[in-house]
Amino acid sequence: MALNYISAAEAASLIKHGYNIGLSGFTPAGTAKAVTAELAKIAEAEHAAGRPFQVGIFTGASTGDSCDGVLSRAKAIRYRAPYTTNPDFRKAVNNGEIAYNDIHLSQMAQEVRYGFMGKVDVAILEACEVTPDGKVYLTAAGGIAPTIARLADKVIIELNAAHSKAAMLLHDVYEPLDPPYRRDIPIYRPSDRIGQAYVQVDPQKIVGIVETNWPDEARSFSASDPITDKIGQNVADFLAADMKRGIIPPTFLPLQSGVGNIANAVLGALGRESSIPPFEMYTEVLQDAVVGLIREGRVKFGSTCSLTVTNNCLNGIYEDIDFFRDKLVLRPSEISNSPEIIRRLGVISINTAIEVDIYGNVNSTHIGGTKMMNGIGGSGDFTRNAYISIFTCPSVAKEGKISAIVPMVSHHDHTEHDVNIVVTEQGVADLRGKGPKERAQAIIENCAHPDYKQLLWDYLKLTDGKSQTPHCIGKALGMHAALAATGDMRNVIW
Image (cartoon, rainbow, N blue to C red):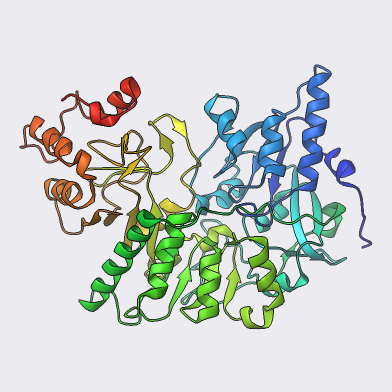
């Protein structure tokens, strides 16, 4: 079949009001850019003419400003799932303008396949290469590309020259069968490859190829500081101690880490910890810090869904592909985040909390319980199935006006049943083998900031102390109420 090259504007014109569009990519890596930017222009023109124009969007995770940003500003999104990080999208969600479905990343592809979200009208895949027989070689991420490509009525390819064809060597594309025919996913080591290097698309469905040269809209994270460095060191010291006492095997175990400056600090500390042997990653995203550790030999292998790295780092991987081809693999998100594989491999999960309550329940998505930050991402996939689940956060925020340790979380993402370890710059609370009252003592004593420690002890005194999980229901959100009323949680009056 001959390849049909069209402009981004022509491709966008194929997308109609009410369509559901599926996008490749995972974070800004590997996602659509040119077609969605043109789609925003169509939405603005239609709205100016008094006509409706909105679409549903299915993605692997977040995208870049050329997708979530421009479409949010154009008021072109009716429904979207899952995770996102764009500030304009966040504003629209919190204003009630977008129906945002915050689901676990491991479930996104299968829920689309199950028909829970409606049909996929158009899929847009970013590729570094495409062949006439429909082999589409993805760029810097796996995401939900195999599923949306198979289900979509029409497929548009963004052939992006900003990505080297070296990316063809990194992917392992595998789509599981659906129940009742699903079999085990045969990954027994992070380095196992079980699929193929490309997404196979029916050539008859490819309605156009858009040539672009558009680098990933990579996010850079702030540099580490004394607080994040201390959190990182606390995590490294804890894991080294657990290995020394035989809880973690001497060969160590694969790690999962979220994104951000705390994650970078944790990985940096683990890289420096001489008692921890070179280790593997089985995770959903890899940042610059991990690539550096691979180069140094501290990380032996990285299995991921996305290279969420700066463009300089990504180009370095492409240029050194002979070095990285047997040290990296990119997978679809339902494989990188598969609960089955996470539990089998014994992955140690390290994720970031917004707030943690004294019993170990975690809020990782909402500010003040009502305003969406980014979404749960893959933290639930890994936390519930981890060998050891760790949550990190600074003990305070906003110049000490907000405590990350509270009597009761204002929004509940991860339950006390799944959270093993809480780490702040103050210290480490090991919740394993402890009942709720013992958990409260460990968290307050080891993780709370000195400005809030006595306030939290005072809260516990308000309870009857006899319940399995002691709470004073009328005051459990008192610190949040004080913040709303005065701008400072320290002004709480019990």
